[in-house]
Amino acid sequence: MDITVNQAEIGRRIREIRKKKGLTQKDVWAGLFSSGKYSSIERGTWNLTNEDLEAICLRLGIEKKEILPEEPEIPKVKSSIMTALYNIKIGLLKVARITLEEIRPHIKETPSMQLYYLFAWGEYYIQQEEYEKAIYYFSQITNTGTTSFFDQENKIRAFNALAYLSYKKLNVSEAAEIGEEAIEYLGNITGEFKKERAITYYNNAIFQCYLKNYEYARDYIYQAMRYSQPNKIDKYILVNAIIDIQSEAHSRNIKKTLEDLADTFFRENDIVSYTKVLFCQYYVYRKENSSVTEFLVNIGRKLSSELKSNISALSAENHSEITQLEKDSIETLNILATIAYYEKDYRTALKFITLCYSFARDRNLDNDLIWARIHLMYAKLQNTFLKDPKEEEFFIDKALHHLEKFPNSLERGILLYEKAKLTNQLKKDDIVSESLEIFYKNAMSTYFSKIVLTRALPLPEY
Image 1 (cartoon, one colour):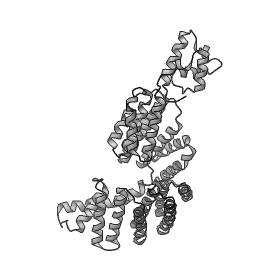
Image 2 (tube, rainbow, N blue to C red):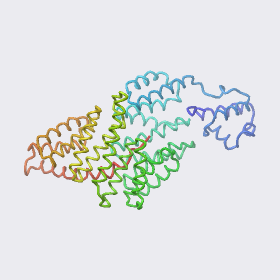
Image 3 (cartoon, rainbow, N blue to C red):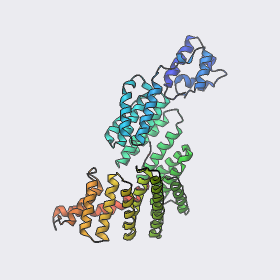
């Protein structure tokens, strides 16, 4: 049976009809179900199948339509919401909004679709980067009582979406609190919800690892693995490896584990997860004082080769729009340049950032944050390696232009300081200049360690 149906209402109607006919519970369940299952059906806590309902109706001598709530618009509304969510996923936000607005009048007639509809709006505003509006819609879901299994599923996903948004704002303590609420809610409902349980425990493992509560993190990732779908297990193994590395409890086999994960993610074109493994490998190499340069060059060669062949294939297909795989690969090359720069291997850093720039330009990348980071790296290399102040200022200005949408970002603060210093706007023995110098030194000392220790962690899911 469709899980959008209000199970509690169905259970109430079955109980009402049974009593009207003067039947006991045993009269209905005998030979069909166990007494416990039938009792749960009447209480609305069992996810009733069509076969179960047909058997009960046959025993009661009635038709299904006497029990099922009348919501004739459900198929149409559900299909429209699914279409809107698909369009949101592929970036057709205007089309998705039109669809959601069109079905708004029908939502009152289909109460079983209300939470799903709210979830679609929340997802829409996440993609629009209007996070406060997204929080508003997801909070409406988590503050609503649920009866159907479908509503319960949407409520779990809304909890995880709220945790995701808090994590994205770097409010990890709040994300962890919301994650605990999601776990508590899961403990109070009867549905199996394997996928949702796995994601909830997975997210909580990430939050606790970030907060350095490694024992809690390890417990949560083991729970996630217990409920995991086969196609997700590699990501959970990665988080488990990160927990072990950061808590310094990893075994001698950690390099082999990471190499296997890297091969798997690369083969599956999952460049985001591949990059997370890269950070773990880099961290291990640094700890062991192994050769980082050789490691970086090998990774960069592999990634740029894949990008070139991917671009060639897309060109042959006349595919002009940049793909997510390309965006992820460009960002990874940027990260490789950053690592090489902080290793003081400036030639390798310049090689990576030049590749990154070329691919981004050729594929018409439209992402201000990535472009800002590309120009920031060029500015750093002009200062440290190429020693060209005019070019450094040029790239600083280019980066600042791309950061106009991110006025409070750490990158913008660092760039503004570097421009002030470059253009002699900082006065010697001036209290403001001194305070800025202190900020800058602290920001730079924590900036890269923060990248290494936290960028390895995946984003939460919902």
